[in-house]
Amino acid sequence: MNFAIAGAGVAGSYLGNMLQKRGHDVDIFEASKKDHHWPVCAWGASRHMLERFSNQAGLDFSNYIFHVGEQLKIELPNNNEESLELKGLVTYNKYAWEADLLKNVTVTYGVKVTREAFAFDKYDYIIDCTGLHRSLLPKSGQDFLIPAYEYLLENVKGADDFYVIGYKGAKGYFWYFPLGDERGYMGAGDIEKKYYGIEAFFKQHPEAKVVKKIGRPIRLAPSKRMEPFYDGNIIGVGESIGSVFPMLGEGIIPSLICCDIFLDVLDRSKRRFDFKQYRKKVLDTFDYYDDVYKIVRLKMDGKLRTVRHINLMMSMYRNMKKEEKRFGFEISLEKMTRLVNAL
Ligand SMILES: Cc1cc2nc3c(=O)[nH]c(=O)nc-3n(C[C@H](O)[C@H](O)[C@H](O)COP(=O)(O)OP(=O)(O)OC[C@H]3O[C@@H](n4cnc5c(N)ncnc54)[C@H](O)[C@@H]3O)c2cc1C
Image (cartoon, rainbow, N blue to C red; front, side, top):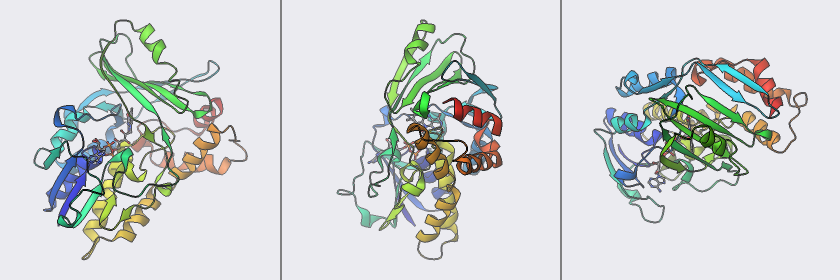
């Protein structure tokens, strides 16, 4: 079959690689110019899952790991502090990983695909992997984005492991994700755009040198609120259809899981891609993300009550616990409740 993919981010790169391996013709179109193409992200995700996706794509993930986390330190409002034992959370060279996935795939850079000006007839299917932009699918009335930006830093002394500051009312959080060799990503997502923690970090680390400042909002609206997933021969995969874990704005693994759902449905489809099956599988897989999203929004509105909303809390806990390895950190009901209450 003939596929066009709009967007060479994590979903577009992985999907391009995997479709080509299956013998399909693939053309990828990426809006940014090749020299400016950079994965805007803090490059943190579960090693366990990335090993699986790398194996499937024929890459050795150990070549890409920058930093293996041991403990995540979390600062909370009112001087509360918490720490989570890490179970495989790493930072990795996302730039190189995606570039290597695309080694043998045709990518045209500097082309912003639009609904108005694209040769849709040339392809059997067009995959919308444009992430936040969702450039080809109709907009969703229930979308929800959180503004974010970050710095790529070098020469950062004494910040050796994952560190976050949770904002009051779950309005966002500050992060420092080490990349090894005194480099790291420092940034924040904040619905109120105050980005608490960034200024203080620079004051604490006057030696830190800014290599890059990058940013874009993160979609928190989960798949259930990001329909339609397809329109004519356009199919959305990745953050474009809400595969982001809403509590953390974490989208690498969910987007790759979404790619695998797409590939699985494609493999099982008879003549035409089974759109309905794809929709069902995406909704089923990310079903509990909607409960997590509700927790976040209730918290933001100051309406979350741990007793009244116990079902939502239990849904988040049970589902995350089942997938502890996929998250890469310990999942404890006690800590989760303390964290949510402290925000
Ligand atoms: C500051 C920040 C930090 C983050 N940190 C993490 C993290 O540490 N861990 C984690 O799991 N998640 C993180 N995320 C979220 C994660 O990066 C995304 O959810 C994930 O990259 C989504 O993958 P995607 O392939 O769907 O979209 P993207 O990776 O966003 O890729 C979309 C691509 O499409 C291109 N594009 C857009 N419009 C068009 C168009 N019209 N035509 C052609 N190309 C187009 C873009 O240039 C881009 O290359 C972070 C997000 C932000 C903003």
